[in-house]
Image (cartoon, rainbow, N blue to C red):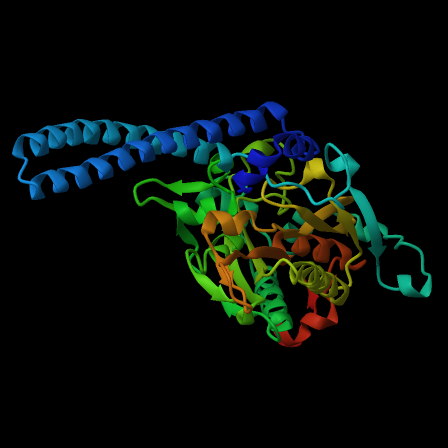
Length: 433
């Protein structure tokens, strides 16, 4: 969440900044009012507590002076004030809870250099890449045999079975078979090996507590998009970002240990509640998918370089996979609620004739760390400081899988995979029926 002191000190400036995201200034005013009410109630409680403390001192003096009637009178006043203080404490706590709940719904302040815009149509394309583009070759002119959607290719080759998946789990759950399944495993090993030089590999739980989901901003605003196991108070993670963000929840790290980098390969679960009727064929939008995530804790000074580093790693994988891609700088109106700055990577899938998002690389500043209470102690001394958090997919496989199958399709119906995966596929790089 954002620092409430920013709203307290200059609510108009914060309202203008959040208006870039489409946030109604009335939401900021409401938070400012709740903050003022919470501080007023806390001050009332503290004033009563001070009076009680003073009365306790006077009771002690009266008893030492052996003035029993005065001590009893003062004690009675103290008991009366004690009841008032308990009521005031409850009111202060309630006001604080209202403020906290409101702050949880306020999105992050967009970075100054995030482009202005209201939605996806206003995102800024930074660059494109495709095999051979460095030599001046034009964007690939995909052939007719590559213009077949992956769900048809998958059925022809027996490597994607959406029908049996639906029988087992309902719609929008995929089932990969044979080389289709091996390809998902190969991609995961390929990515984890690529990141092993700097990123500590983690295998986190895929079920987490509500506090863990709240730390990243997925709860409460996006609770309807998550799979909640109410009996156990657990959530199926929508991304490994969720458990990785809380790896050091409530801790104070040493500045010398930053940046701390983690990678994780997990299944991810999303209801995609707002996507009814869109992209429901094949693997473009599924309730479960595999993904390798990169995550880092950093100082404010380290964060820009880490943001660029994660983006560079996602981009390097796409080049090795020989997939045409583009990089988008998300405008303020299209940023995720927790993000201050995001770069999206999209690959082109010729069978779908669409650009498919395969990675979002985001910088959250201290928004998530404030929720998770992850701080570091400066090497120069002084009070602990909130960390900055950053993360990015490197990469998400459901759409990469689709793009590889469509792009690599040959005239005879087989699929040729990029050479970088050969070592993870036992030397096999061609999928045949």
